[in-house]
Image (cartoon, helix red, strand yellow):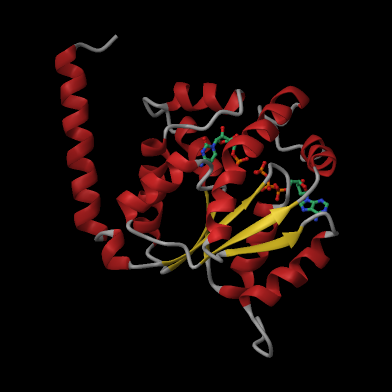
Length: 220
Ligand SMILES: Nc1ncnc2c1ncn2[C@@H]1O[C@H](COP(=O)(O)OP(=O)(O)OP(=O)(O)O)[C@@H](O)[C@H]1O
Ligand SMILES: Nc1ccn([C@@H]2O[C@H](COP(=O)(O)O)[C@@H](O)[C@H]2O)c(=O)n1
């Protein structure tokens, strides 16, 4: 167990590291990126469609869930807390997730980001707005039935600890209670582009393409 002095030292080191990173990579305000939030229930196909968008439209894909899982693997002091939250389908405190997103955006340096699986609740949304001062251009919302999402997640086979029936149902509940209100918030601002995600991957992508390359513009 660390002493108070050790903890204080660690915090100071982290702050210094963050300042150094900011100096090296600038700030999000300098970068002023285009951001599209990609939302939808677990297993609705967000990651699958993001890969297509990256390939054809020059966006960088940042999945909040992937960043959190990488943080666990890195041996970070937050690793155990994050792992426990993910196993329960709970939402990790915003400051943790936002730091990871901010760092990834600055390190990457692209000015077009698909932010997948974020904001997951009202706290995520308000905190990101506060820290990053970025409004999304729009929100891509993949709408899918729970029955279909559960079928997909049980067949995903990526060894994820949260892809089991018990946790999947908890994740559905969190989506209904915490994430849908965020989608409704953006809908009230005219920012939601809703896609029927129950269809086959290629058909869903046709609808996605129409949003990113309207009318006669063609993707590569
Ligand atoms: N339209 C689709 N039809 C059938 N299967 C699909 C479709 N889209 C994605 N899948 C499959 O469903 C599984 C979940 O997809 P994906 O990982 O893209 O979902 P996600 O929304 O990113 O999930 P999560 O939020 O849990 O990370 C994957 O195995 C993927 O291959
Ligand atoms: N903004 C977020 C995003 C994700 N989480 C946690 O990660 C789990 C997996 O997320 P996926 O998007 O990869 O399905 C999710 O169930 C949460 O536990 C989070 O806390 N905050």
